[in-house]
Amino acid sequence: MTEEGRHRETFRKAERLCGETTVGAFFAARNEGSGVESFVKYPLLVGFRVVEKRKAEEASCRMLISVGKKRFKRAVKRNRVKRLVREAYRKEKWRLEEEMSGSEGKTLQIAYSFVGKELPTQEDIDKSIRVSVERMLKSIEQKKRG
Image 1: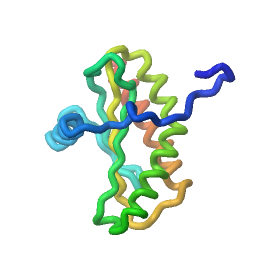
Image 2 (image 1 turned 45 degrees about the vertical axis):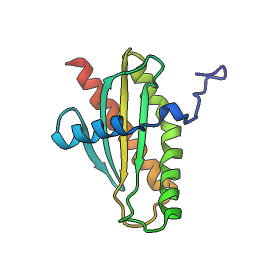
Image 3 (image 1 turned 45 degrees about the horizontal axis):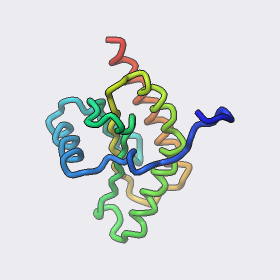
């Protein structure tokens, strides 16, 4: 938290889930059904897992956004959807960071895949992200308890 009692609403490069090996391992685990939880909060398919940090300076939450060409042929529309998801996540991520701050040496990896058929509004994406964050928090708390 900053001095005014507000959270930093930024989305730095270190918070992006990127790299061929990291992303490949995430989706391989999802396809095997080991360690990755998935659910749909329309218009987003959400997958997440908690893993050990590879580096000490790695962010506590890392996120990936995927919008397929099958949904939108034009890159302008795909980029717009990514921008909407990034903005909504940026506003809500502080809740996940607070939860993960107690888990030293662990990082939360999240993948948002757009599955809608038409261009969403910011309100639709905000609601989906808010609900998905709440669901992830419940799941993480349950795993911590036992």
